[in-house]
Length: 246
Image (cartoon, rainbow, N blue to C red):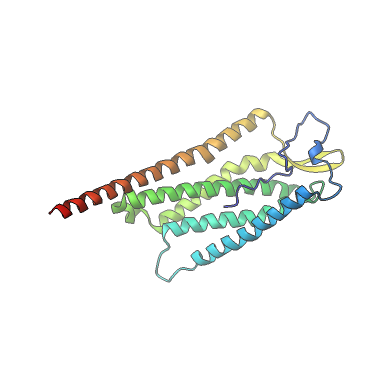
C-alpha cells in the first residue's frame, strides 16, 4: 500500500562510484532543513500516520476470528499484506526520514543494511501476495466446483510462508551489497556492488521475477475471471429471453 516510498540514503538516487574521491553535491552536508526537505518530511509523516492507522485497523479486524470458524483464504492474504506494509512503515520510514534532517548517516551499519533489505523484502511480499490473491480469485470464480477443496486456510498459510521465504531469499543481495561508505570525513549508506554487471543481473532478475511475471499472472487470472463472468451473464440473458418467449 505504501511501498512506493523510495528507501535510499540519497534522496536523488546517487550511487557510489568506487573510482571517485568526491562527494556528489546533492548529498553534501545540509546547513539547514530546506523547504523541499520539510515537504518531504511532512509527506513521510502523513504516510506513516495514515499507513500505521489503516493497516493496524485491518490487522485488528482480521485477526479476530470466531472460535471454530476457519479464516477465509482472502482474509489470510489481506492480513499478510497488511502485516508486510505495517512492518515496512515501522521499520523503514522512521529511519529513512533522518536522511532529510541529518547531513550524514548516523544510524550505523546494521540499520543501513536492514532498512534497505527489509524495504525490498516487504515490496516483494506485497507483490507476491497480490499475485496469490489473483490466483485465489481465479480458482474461486472460474473453478468454483473444485474451489472448496483448494481454497482452504492451510493452503493459504503455506502460500504465505512460501512468499516470505522467497522474498527473504530474493532480497539477500541487497543486504550483502549495502553498507557504510566513508568520504571526506562523512558517512553514507550506499550500495557498493563488486562490479556493475552483477548489479545489472540482479536488477533484471528482480524486474522479471518481482514485477513482470507477477504482472502477467495477475493479468491472466483477472482476464479469465472477466471472461468467465461475461459468459455467465450472456448465458443468463439468453435464458431470460427464452423464458419470455414461452
